[in-house]
Picture 1 (cartoon, rainbow over the protein chains, first blue to last red):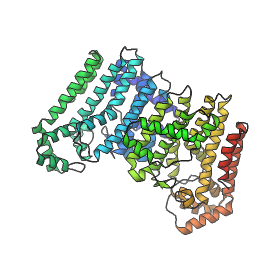
Picture 2 (cartoon, rainbow over the protein chains, first blue to last red):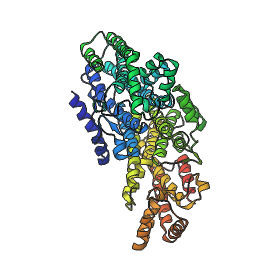
Picture 3 (cartoon, chains in turn green, blue):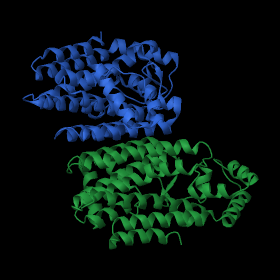
Picture 4 (spheres, one colour):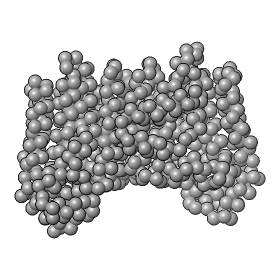
Length: 294
Length: 294
């Protein structure tokens, strides 16, 4: 089924009839296609919806990488690193607009559900930039940002798929998707702090250096005494020396911050699964997410 | 009527409920609203369509200014110059997606007509970057690029307005819009070479320095002998000294290239006006465009 989505995507790109676009598109590193797997788990026929959402997701990553000056994506050089910011921005705009063009063919209210999510996603990116300017110890602002940046499109994907599949209460699938998306982001935040660069496919401990005060870091901050807090704040938004990374690792281990973040993941997962009555394929997707935290 | 479009736009932005977005939006320098004037001349009731198209246009300019590293827009500092590339990219994405959200409420086939134009517009921006990499003496490639970058959205605006107004042959309004857009771009290209910075609201003679081989420059190239061609090619894509600008001015005057470009504008205008049976308000819009070349 995932192959069908990839075929549909390739067809959409070919329809643009611009060899340069096809060439750039083929350089995009392949992703996990979480959104497609979710959509097809709810509505097995919804190939075009899955392909549209993947195009939107790819477009948002292209702009995200320009914004973060990222040189790597999924273990490969990013498009902005290979071909410059200009082409990355434009390829993103092309994929967005082609996605909206295809979206307009889907039945009401799906175009509105998905395009509203894209607005939230873009607002979330903007909030991410704002929050990254200083050390942010505010959990609520962090959750609002990751809901918009990561949760909203997965929420909309699940809800739209549920509508296409004729499910009785599509908003409950939306809740599952929202929780899956937020939990997914928190897992990424945890892995940034616990895994090595090789496994991540990007530099480790990068979030804090890039200015991102992720949930485990907020929890770490809450656990520290004033001197520790001062020191953590001082590490924000700059390259870290080996001793500083060692200090951060040590503090994280002693603080229970990672466990607290994992518990948050588990409770989001629990709530999401219950919303959809423990539907087997959705249970499986959520479990695979949680496995990454072990 | 234009005030009604501005009111509708302000309402769309307010609906995003993000003070930062409202604040950034208010810093956008006001434009001539050519697309709204055109839409309302064809369909006086089409306020939402006009506001949607203005949002799309504003989003494309935000990304365009990032791509061109432009510091000025309409005589005022650009958003990327004031707030950085990241915010300019994201504000563009927010305006694009909000536009698509509102577009999805309009009747078939308007969402598809407009979103297809946005794809062409983005492809046109990408082609503009590619063509700017070297001196481009190919008139056909230039026309393909400006049709996509400037003509396609104006074409779609006119065609969509004609459908909303119940006109019999909306595609003829599309042709008028396409010609208006292409002619508009050529006029801009001429003014870049003939006017002073103060009147332009941006540096004069900037196109060639930025790598853009515009139509009058292509015509100038065709008129030169091999030595002149070599010299013109050599000026491409770099800052020009005073003597070099003086040489360019002198050659332009002697070559007839500007007149040839103006003739192209006039014939596009003629064809556009005839397509819509010399409708008075559309005649007026086209005439105002041509006046700028005098």
